[in-house]
Length: 312
Image (cartoon, rainbow, N blue to C red; front, side, top):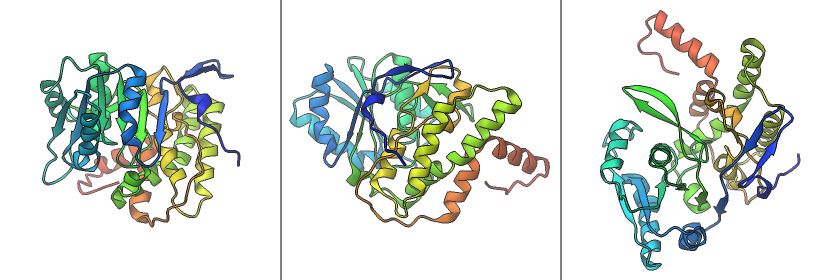
């Protein structure tokens, strides 16, 4: 299995044999212990002076306070908005959360920084997109594979819709923070990796049946990464880097293609192994959900049979 270097894929574009030009705006990747401490230097390098920080109750405790302390010590002015997480359940990436971010918006801010991986990431990159400001991400958990994606799935009028969003200029990951994430989030990230087998098959079938665009180059990169991770017996930092980088190469259009996870290739890495046991049931349910064709058919079948208690 050949390893791949990240450098050729940062802030790059290349013409592919599929006839399209793949490009990435993602330019800076910090993956090391204490990575957050390097944020002021990165801001100075890129010429940003006043970030707007977005987090929630949980991610603010995990990495938000640390980010604020680092900026304060560096003398960098910032605005910070902490979304209140509900006591029961999870924060939703919906119009209410987005409105809260907009009402607390610092109009003088020249950069949006999300501190969080899933919901906060989606809200921050979409808010960055609609306000025309660049975006950075401080990741807190390896719970999904679209950290540097150019789209954001948001809930609008009780329906989840995928919107175009801003790709991050930089991704900051502290492996000590990432590996201490809750077990269910690690399981979700692992399932996103294993679910790529379903996604690749789903994409190929749609190419044959619906004449959907298909790229062998992108599929091969993804397949190489998935097989590299699968061969590892233990969960490792290579796995964390894999889902952090998933999305580094994207086709600009159509967004219908971008919504399929198999269109976001990732790169395998070699780091110190960290053994973690993952709940099998959570992984299997997540994998099934990642195959769009299967999940759609299954959902319609349950609806037709009126199985209101069905879950997948």
